[in-house]
Image 1 (cartoon, rainbow, N blue to C red):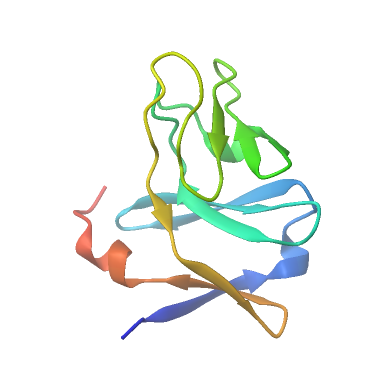
Image 2: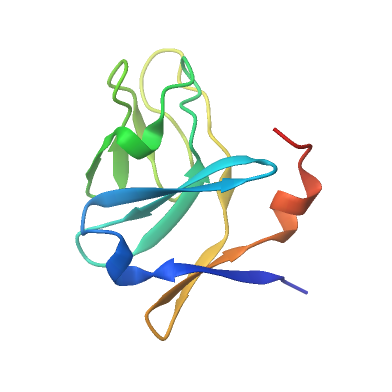
Length: 111
């Protein structure tokens, strides 16, 4: 059974923008695409730990603000040399609200 937490309204995140949710398990970045899809990733680039929430959202990817690594929002996979992967979180939209799956957050050690 999934434990969904109401995080914010979709309109709280601008199209092609991001917001950060701070949790005991670390920061999660919520991303909104131009067509109103929402994705959630750990807010830490796998390359050098850059804050993905400060990156540029384009299509279904975000570019890290530190070293221009491109991260796929759906999978967390990084492109290019030293690719790596960032953890993703289940997220859904319901009546204009963004819901985040809290099970994984509860299973992580505190940050």
